[in-house]
Image 1 (tube, helix red, strand yellow):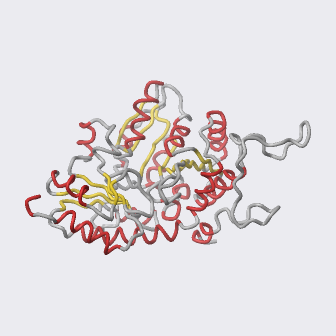
Image 2 (cartoon, rainbow, N blue to C red):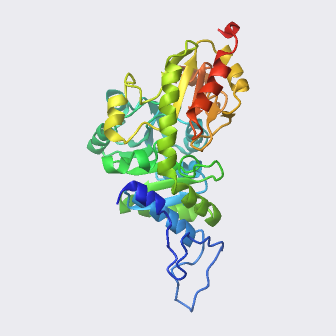
Image 3 (cartoon, helix red, strand yellow):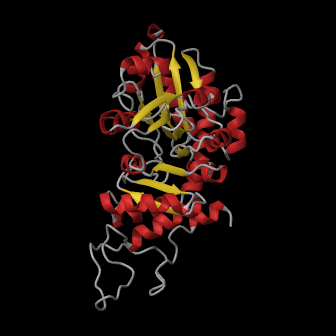
Length: 384
């Protein structure tokens, strides 16, 4: 079955008793037992809820994994995965990454003895150099990275990790399983902020973990149940509804992104454009091999950092907001928003500077979006 059909059929007719086309919302905390030592398979919704169970099964199938887990947010999902490790363990993490991931590592897990090295995972030799024998337990990768769109060769990272007995974890939020399936490339665990493309409408918070083997399924399952940061049934239903249109949204969004990238690349006030679909992008060939597309996230630098605030204040159709992946195009200022918790010296080192803007491209008419950017960027020569 093609993935487009899988997506459209997400949660279809899962209630055999009624034949309901849409998965019912089982808004209950607990379940009645028919008798002592007799269970329907459902006891308490923190452990398992029928609506969440359908979503988790859908995500496991889409990512071609062994089991899926739905959490209350993307950060809850990342936290659950980080709880696989113990004090004294060491992990390597993509150095150009979401600021919230940096924050939870540095402010929460560091105090419990989990050490972290930030590395450009697109450079295999650099990754190999940073491995600490006996201590390095995992590599956590964003590909493409947020916000500079660096691409990691997942097959090569998996090979290196396997040789050294290291776990590989990929945040697949930007690509979604529609465009990229890291578990098929040998990755052990996949993460998503389901809030983004999977939900697709900026109306639900969620996080997803999918595991490749029962070994990690059992561990994540225990963590999910014991810590309790689960996704509720109403939000699980919203996620299922969003997933049904993922293929259509992603196709339109990345089509729009490609046209906006071409326009930005010709604008004299734009210094650099970061998008893996550009043939000159250093990760273009790798991304072409390991994914079905290039996604709808892009970043660009303007010639003068003073222009950034003016652009953001001038846009009319595009919305200034954090987050990404919804049907609406959002403009974000990483240095003040998504990466505000990262120290200035580290931001400067990885290139998250005051002249950088990030766009999450939506499904609007692309000419409207380009006209909006044109009037926002181009108004007044005094800006440059």
